[in-house]
Image 1 (cartoon, rainbow, N blue to C red):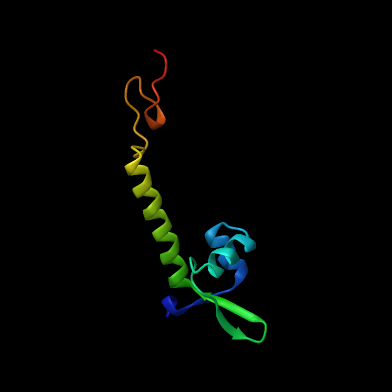
Image 2 (cartoon, rainbow, N blue to C red):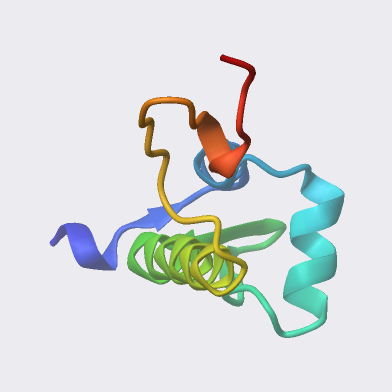
Length: 88
């Protein structure tokens, strides 16, 4: 069952794109899924929990962008990325 899969630190860091220290600080602050003890000196993370954490961060980023009026990239005549008007 893929949803019960445990991933090790190397896979975790590749998935989230953060340093070990940043991930550790987030976990310590309760803002990241908790590790699971696999054995003596071995830990892992539930893949499903980490994937949900990533999706939640993406949702928050999109909500913040919408609140700030930074919706998706829309190019119209005379308008460039993020609403900046270029010279004509």
